[in-house]
Image (cartoon, rainbow, N blue to C red; front, side):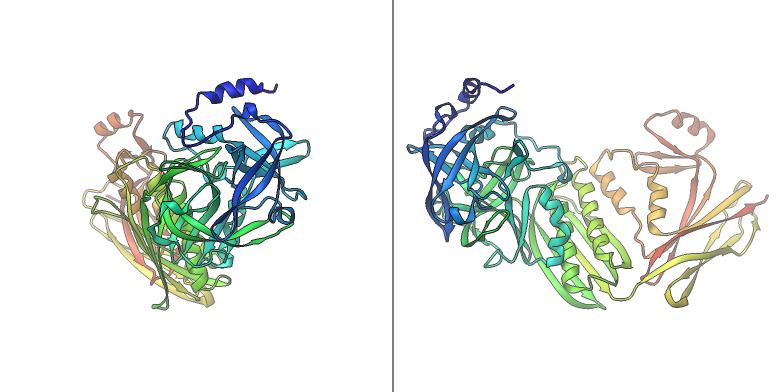
Length: 573
């Protein structure tokens, strides 16, 4: 059932409207009315276009309506509704009615859905909490007419300094969010890192919401709808719908327009910083002029055979949802631009994630050697680690800097754990056992590594197991007991991440088939029976049947190790 327009009008009437913005209520708008829209077609000059009201679409969303309008004038008869026009204000009799926000893909006519200004203004009255979403959960808004559907005017996202392969790699996911990635259209490089003159902005001006600034930059283009003192309203639809946020935005200039069969778009260039977007909601993005966003420095160095071949310095937004995704794209592009993107590639990664007011840091250490997938694996590992840290729920973990050193090689630096044998089949307490592992490589290469273990005096008789495995399996064996437990402190979270073993070594785990317990992230092996009886009945403590006695390390000469083999010896009295 459609919601009556009078009820919608009553619901929206409670929204405070500044005297600086003269608004026409949606209840006063009807088909046949004519208005004027404002946007930028060239440079930074705001120009008029004509709007004919076709009707009102009610109940298109929760307490939401759309004004349907036909646009004309300027280049619109040739281009249709342009990407980058999102937020273009529309006026009737000098009163603001809303912003261009939705359009029909492949439409021959420039017909747009206009977001009522009342719905945009109420964004600032919403609770200031982040939206609990993931990128994979988001989809563009739509409004239907039978088989034809109107969608949010796609937000063009300019990638500067990224390889074409990197953009293609992440484009499908970006498009599901209503974002349209573009390469090479951010003319002039990175935005100027200084605050601009607010007087250069007016309703209809082009802006760019910046996600990354520096040697690589990412900016999402849209149009400013209204200015109320230092408050700004733009887009007429969500950007990423991440709720309360802290994203810098710049003034932007249009270089030219490109007509397209699907949706035409503006080719633009970000200029100086103007302020911060603080709310990203379903009907608008809002923010403040003159404010600065808290950005995180990101430094990436790439070497090949110890020779530096690439160095990148950027700043990325500090956001639980966006920062890991931006890190993933930057790492992938850095490797793709300076190393082989296909064929054999090995990547060693060393780096750290530093925090404000803390001396310790999360260490990033690993190696990847695959047939064409090493860049993807390295980028994903870095992003996953950052995501785990940022979504740990500790507000005192505020990012200070992310630094990465990537060592690329055209050789497949990989070894597989082959045969494993011990110097003895049976032993007594006090005896030393030598465990030898043969690590097999390509072209018949074989490396032998030996580790020694002395059985403690007084050790109970029984079977002793020696498992030689790679870093991921060694880490999983330790974390299996705690992986489902939420860290109770920032110290515990950082410790857990730093206990993940790098993949450039083989690990010899010496263990027995006896109970062990995980207590606040730390493993307690083979406790006395009296203590085991107490802690074994505690629901918050995880029990395992395999008690690790110790762990030995075998160096693999900088190669990635994979595989697992287990042998056993009998301990006699």
